[in-house]
Image (cartoon, rainbow, N blue to C red):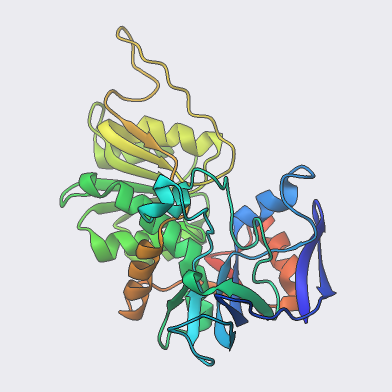
Length: 344
């Protein structure tokens, strides 16, 4: 079968590999769609030895069951499924309470991270990782598994502060950010303020339901402050889907005292924390800062339910498998709006 693999650090190429078979407790999934994520770029750029090579990339996977392995129940050939991408140890306290994204044994494990992912014609998946998607289009189902799940998890972490009449600033209206706007619209009654450098991204945010849009630039903090009020007031929640120094700075400068900042993006920015009593602190007093990671299987089930109800839809740009390296090049250059999805 064809697969797009990281054959060495920074090297991504299409190769021919044997088609795998489903073992005990596993299914063989015929891949129908795979989302291309910024996290894949971090994997490609990582130092040698941090991730296995060669390895098939792709952790946002949806497809059709082709073969059911011994001992599998609840799945038959021909059923369509989305893949929960995390594989924890299954035994630690976090995994036992369903928070496999907080596994205390496996640091970052899953498809396209520690084992072959979905950028191939087939992938073997433990049956426990599959969720039914009904008649959802596979190109819509695949992004739900990360681009939908990760912002949903972040919103869940901030749920107590996302009360009617509050405000939420969403920074970065890309693959995750445009889903976050829809999740906030569908599950809260907050005022949504979208921030991005791109006018096209802000137009997308408006179409998805954002109440206000602010183009990132030298005056963006002042423009956000005009909407949320001066300190100690401000945004009740800030979701940063970029995580670079400029966006982290914006986040801490617009959040309210007692607010919450969630750093979802992985662009390497630094958040200074300096508790002081005699001058404005780097982060407002009583502010909570969290670094969300992916989400739980139960949360993915809820994300799929939102999509099946027509309340969550990814803005996708599709590519054939052979063009997956090009899709990642466009993603690296910031030329993908919404989510790039590879269709094997």
